[in-house]
Image (cartoon, rainbow, N blue to C red):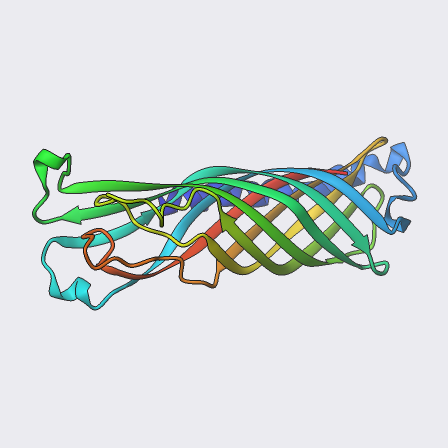
Length: 243
């Protein structure tokens, strides 16, 4: 799974690197959206695709038991839908926020079991999935290059707070579930390009996100939970914003 993820990221980076070539081709057509960057506020709609998994820290109990032999967090694909508010500070600096940012994910864990419970539907390799519908509030600082024709590059970094509306922490009879906390926070960074068209600005962006909070609610009575200590979210997102 990891090599497939790296391959997809490579293709996305190649596509982004071709954007300056596109911009140079637009020189003959003149400048679009000439006054766009002089406006104090920009608003946009953001749609993205994410690949997410968890960073796992094993609990000391993992070495003491002999049922769960290994744990792997499997990358899964989700989607992002958001509204953008951009505040222009200066020619090269902006502050961005996404006051409405919905993230739909499905994170999966793959366990290698020495003694699978066959009647319960387990196998030597068993997968457990966690559905996520997250409401996020990212706030970012963006540094932009000079505009070249109908093209501008930028990089950004910032922080985010996330609240998982589908967290299973409160569920009962969850012997086969991992319990996760609803609240998470983290940092993110990325690069992107503004492509100026006659009636709108299109912005492809690639970013990575690192969750800083341990969202695992460890339960010593659940065999799929007691072998893990910490879970931290990891996300790679490719998105398009229309302003």
